[in-house]
Image 1: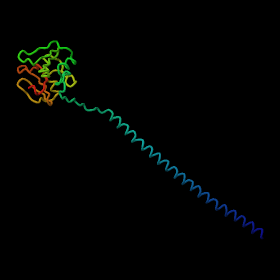
Image 2 (image 1 turned 180 degrees about the horizontal axis):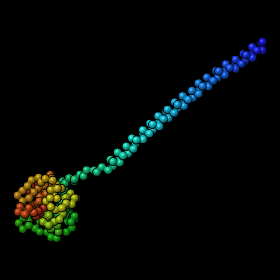
Image 3 (image 1 turned 90 degrees about the vertical axis):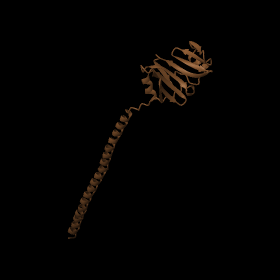
Image 4 (image 1 turned 135 degrees about the horizontal axis):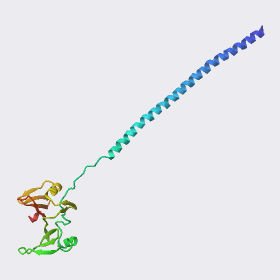
Length: 204
């Protein structure tokens, strides 16, 4: 009888042990499944974040490429009448010869002995007592160089470059920049440019 009781206890213990083991295994499996799901969830979230962050990079690159194709605004030069054909209002005869070489001739005014004209192929420079009185570009010149910039020697081109004339006279129009003046002599009847004079305001 004691043997039966002992065997029964052993069998009961075995069943009891196996009964606890199964739920434990089941709980571990559930725990592992949950952990796997939790591990997968951040991975999927990171994947979505990386994928989403790629789109703005492409957009930013496209925007930068478009910005490179913008055409800068063209700025016109501002003319101060500091020089005409490379000559300034403060050049003396020796400076003139250094810049342009010897003139074709030097003509002295018969009435005003202090005035002399240095003739060059495309212009004449008048001096009074050794000071530059005026620079004259005759009719027929194709271009004029103002402050180092070449401009067609026409009324239209000069107005385009210099803007509105500062004032009009009966024989032409005048552009004034400080003490420097550029006058276009225009024939009243034909409205044709006859000459261009560059001079100091004190020469008027």
